[in-house]
Amino acid sequence: MTRPHCFVLQHDSPISFYPDKNQLMIDGEEIHLEPLQARLLSYFIENRGKVLSPQQIADGVWQRTQVSDNLVRQVISLLRSQLQDKTRPYRIIQTIPKQGYLFDIEVTEPSIKHSPIPEESTPLTRTAKPKNKHMVLAVAAILTVGLIVAWAVQNGDTIDDTTVITAQQSDVVPVYIHDITLDSTSNFEMAESVYNYLFYGLNSAKNLSGYHYSQLSQQSKQSLANHGVELKSWIKKVDSNYVLSVLVQNNHQPNQSQKVEKTFNQDNFFDAIGDVILEIKAIIAPMSPDYEVASHRVTSISNYDDWKVISEGISLFYQGKGGPAFSDIAQQLNAIQQQGRDSYLVSALLSYSESLAYLREHKQEDREQALHSAKQAFELNPRCDIANLTLGLALLINQHPNQAFPYLFYAAESTPSPISFYLLSVADKLADNPKGSQYNYQRYTEMKKEHNGQLFDLIESSQKANLFQTAE
Image (cartoon, rainbow, N blue to C red):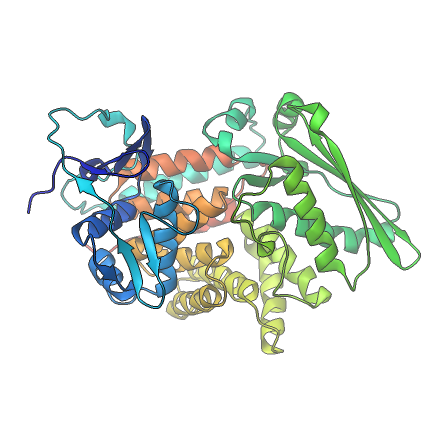
């Protein structure tokens, strides 16, 4: 059966779907779909009126059986968002409890001579062309470009971020976190734990992206005069408690700057700092209707000493760093796991360490263990962006780019970060989608603002090893 040029979904506002372009048109707005989302919507249209189980969807869309129900739910959730069907009860893709999903709205197939969507507006559409027998060289090329960019930043070349902040990331607010000012050097350890919690919490938000202010180039710092949000914090100890003060400085709208203050101790650390993050998020970008407490509070860790290790690993992960610093963290994470205090963050960070080890040393057992740890983390928390990113990376080094893509895409959509867009660019390149690779690499470079080059270690090790490749 030949696919029609266009489907029109009869909803509150008619939705035009162009399968050959992976495009939606809603109220005159062009919305790009990833190839997987387009296949999923086409599958629902083909099976309109039928209740489909997650396994049926996995078989029909992924055309493989090793797809978890959690992953199917994630991709359906993302498609609902693109269709602007975001509130329960869902009306376009209905959830049928204990059975599956039902797509039962009216669909028409108008006869259209000319598409209103220009070709150049489809940055991620896959192009039909023969398999590239020199894929390894192509992948090495993109990784080399990344290495050159990172090397230039490492060696002091500065980039003006003024246009970066206001470019395509207008929906993502950059938040620059200053080092915490100490009342006494004895408070350094607590300040570091608080800083890492702020960094993780803000990077777990869909519409915020946190950066280390101390790692920005001087020119980038100067460009912040009228852009972005800065967090300036102070901590002091009063008797057995700590007092944290955070100035949320809105450079674009100074009248919206506010101060957050919290008194806490080591026993209520997670709840107290989690609430500070919630307040900061509410000031910068009010929460969406589907916001959950887990989006700002660490609920899987109760041991403060464990958090000191895990939070340092998270900070290094978001910067794409490895080397001796992460090797030391990995040893401590292994100890935490062996002592029975495992969590999705521990497993995910260990997977990242094992992926880097494979890229450095090329040992098959590291590659296998990276995938095992990543799957374990994902099963524990399929909504965690770090769990999705480490699983995507592990699948990439195991030469499964098509399987990696949904996890990486979910992470990039739910919590945009430089590492998510970089890995998406690699996945697209390996899957023979050069436009997608170029688009995601551009998003990566737009979000990458730190002076010493986020992802530098990862780019360097993967470029040297040349291990992101597929069989011919």
